[in-house]
Length: 612
Image (cartoon, rainbow, N blue to C red; front, side, top):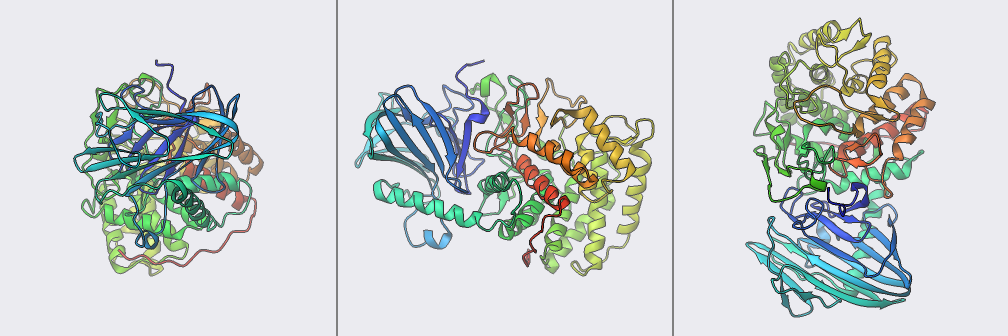
């Protein structure tokens, strides 16, 4: 293992709702893909400290640091304390509404790093090591203290008030400056590929953009209707979902990173810079109940648009524009985080059969309607075709929600989600939200339920089990009451919740399963599964116990409230891709369920309509 890799929890995220960067506590941008989340990285030191590339701005002398987000925003403030003085750095990717951008020149993407000495004096060191398409491009110096890189259609421009010197081979630029109390300096990095290159802002213009970004994020956050305990944690999770949203399409990626390992040194390293249908209904519930109907409707629109070419069959995941061909390959020249190889791009899970996604998409539409939304005729027809596909496919074995690479099984969770798809369609048609025949849907729905109750209940174990006729347990069983299949207080479900917790939980953390999934090595506890457990207990009426569990889970977030896909049960370290949308959806929905169980008043839904 290489000792200079930072813990995953050492990073914070900044973004512009099109791409996102990870900034370390020590002032280094170690990950940024542009122009999209799934593009090749400009900086990738998080996956290879030597070849990955980074952009470090920090005191030259020894320092300690603290950081926070400015209010309820995605503007990151890091304070460095040295023996000679204190330095404050603001990191932000400017954001604005489209009408604002139309009135002025805006870079396609921009990263601003604004420095100010607060007291004393601090010598600042800058090290700029960009990479494009996993290669080392040549940096050239130009007028106005501008460093430029051209590679194909990509132009990368760095403007700085600190003179930087490019090394002989053009792969790195360095510089130092001394700032005294009250003095400031700005570094601005812009990226262009599909639009003309625009010089990034410096000086007063940069400070104005920082202020505008704070205002923009605060206005967005002010829409949040959640006003109960844990508001800061819930809103930080909502902000994370917004940062993981690709605004042009409405898609929400699972994470902004690839190949951060589920176990250090292991091979469970996947590319999560895509959009999983698995997350649909849970994400829509979170956005709608918090008061973000625009994002919810945009996400639903993406769901129905992205799947258009594969309908009436659904794929597991798509890219932000709905591309379904996402072949997986390894980048052998990168070391991987702390030696965790391979580093993968693309994801072969796209080829799997996951029957649960039908329930996710249809229930997502149902959640939209249940909170005041309306569906047009075309959308209704699409949903009915999906329902007919469910009737044809539900008996098949599938790969299941967790995407193991050990072959297909008769997964209980998948059967229940097929039941949910048909249950929701029958309701939507009865209430006039979809027009068309649902002939046979109710009878197939009832056949699925009878099968689950007969074959997924193991009387010897006194529990529902992960596969029909099996004996293994799986945390996805905790979703049965959350999707409305069974009441959490039902005897069978109470027994299942207890059995799953006893088998898969270690204190507050829960593994998703303990069976062989076809891959070597282990993994950490899976973030969202523990939050499902919280919801089950709250719905059982065990509010105090659920609250204690929830609060214990919140302690695993890093200092700026971010969570990864998994958590090491021995050390509490964050594992897997980061920050993880699914985990933050778990935070939001668990808090909403706790509030509901406690009788906290809920805000009314906002009327919406959806047109395909």
